[in-house]
Image 1 (cartoon, one colour):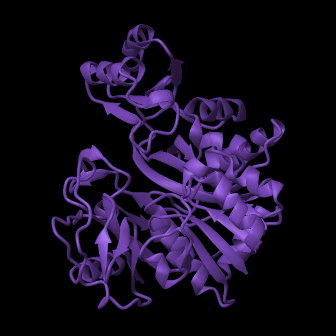
Image 2: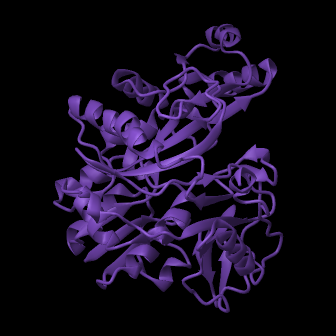
Length: 437
């Protein structure tokens, strides 16, 4: 197949890399790609949010499939535009991408579909929003309604923090139009995990479970980030929960969207909170009595979860994507291998705050790809004869092994051979899983 992958991060490198592992030999392109995607694809100098240029390229080049990585072009209608020129695309149309683009819309769909989730209210007035805070207790979650580059969610431990977040969004216009509406949401207790479901408009097939690490420092300390690591599977998602998650979380959303005239195709990513102690009253799903609630939905592959999930998939990845995009997905299209995988993000000093770019990365050329570890590029570019940093999250290093400990050790062993000025990474990825054992 001739396939275009849209995006420039670790997720897109992982998608292109996994497509290159198929027995069939594909002709793979990435727009715009990064220094890592050059190893498995041809980079195309078009930005991921340039809908017009991407559509024109697809109309001229006629790929068999376009796989859209980031959320912004999905929300902006890239898949709609590709449909008009007759090019199949893996990803929802703009109306479906509102499941991520509007937290208010996602809550409306969940409520209508009976999906278990926390209580929430929407506000446009800061005074009214602050007046509602006491009914939620502490901690409390303040969310900007729209896309805010992963920075629009505040978990407030005090009333002062909650009020400051409301003021930032509704008064200070911190996130622009994305923060014109604010959700106040109850804090859900438990352990968070991710389920990525491949959806073809009617049916869904769950990919392996995963769990990421949002906080920047070891021990889950410091500010939230785009993710500092992930591992798959997540032990908190026991086997008995999977069919219930599909029947009570994923399919009800797909059906509710269908009722509204929206055929959802692509990834439906459910961020879940699992509470084994059953202390949260909302929506018990599992026969064991544990509670699963939806924290949020995303409309695309997660990052860095993708880097931990895709190395575990067998079969033809391109066929699975195409079948989902064209409405004929089957359970057997998704093949899951028994190995575990763990991903560690290597970041620039200062991230998620201010950081420097252009730092030369050493050790990549000697890090020969192998079945046991892979280096995915998140924020890199080629500058002369060097590969240099170009983002806060620079590399996504994944280890694969028979056990989670083996996978984690292989990821860290690979990192030991890589260096750049001020690089840092968490040293406790998968600690929750190890604490369970």
